[in-house]
Length: 247
Image (cartoon, rainbow, N blue to C red; front, side, top):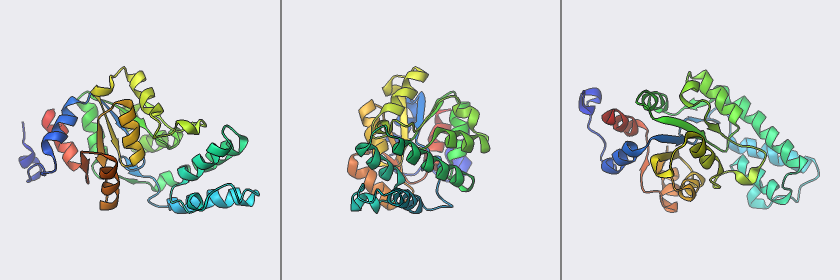
């Protein structure tokens, strides 16, 4: 078989290569977070602006005192949405807010930036018989549309588990991971979660699933390391090499 050196002109990077190969070698099912490891959903938009729009919509409806200052200033629209759900669980307000966020995600999807090496990694893992699922806090219909547009839908279908209106079940709750495990018939120890956020790590830990962190910059890597992620890559390229080595 062609070696990584012959394929790329480089050897596997010295960032925990043994641990990475072990994680890859044991995985029979890989659970992907969506926004980050597969693509940057808001690459052509600003997640902060989306969060700001949700806040303005709430305050325009006479709910100015609903959020704390930290929640209003959040960079993450999911933080805003979950804050509202904690105070008004299951309400029409939460339903409308979730749908508003979904429309933002749908508008962002056409300009989403594919994460480098994600597409070939997805196809290679599929080719060697590893099953794939998406476990995300994003709308599942946005995920399906994005994957279909990249020709990747068949690599995951039907295993796409995303946000519902039961917002208390978003990660870090392991609900979507457990749904994926149940549907694929995989034991937690035979799976692998790829995520880029502390909530991904926490959900994986709660579900008993090994975790591989993806961090596109130093700030995100520090966050993942701080919560206890042991194996973090700054690129999916060494993961692709490791899968090819196992093939």
